[in-house]
Length: 107
Image 1: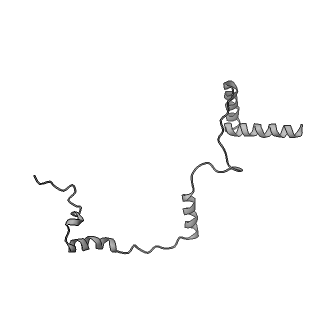
Image 2: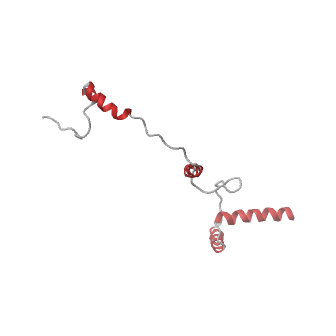
Image 3: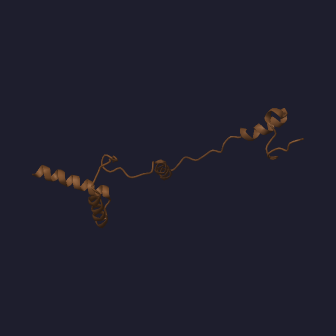
């Protein structure tokens, strides 16, 4: 039983092609790629921005993730307070640590 080709649009296997068929097939890929123009400074800046990694912006020396244990009721109250002050939980904790350190230096 003769099998039909999977895709009749594909060229036959290269090892079964004649030299003329092979030359015609290879000729498609021998063409030079089109010349491009250099990027303008605005396009270069846009390209640099596009290549940048996404994520949070670096604040200070960057951020580090930590794990702490806190009583659930205190954490709930802290989250409510932070939400009312339009800040994140991390900002609230960082501000509290800064304030504690200032008080220790002053006292």
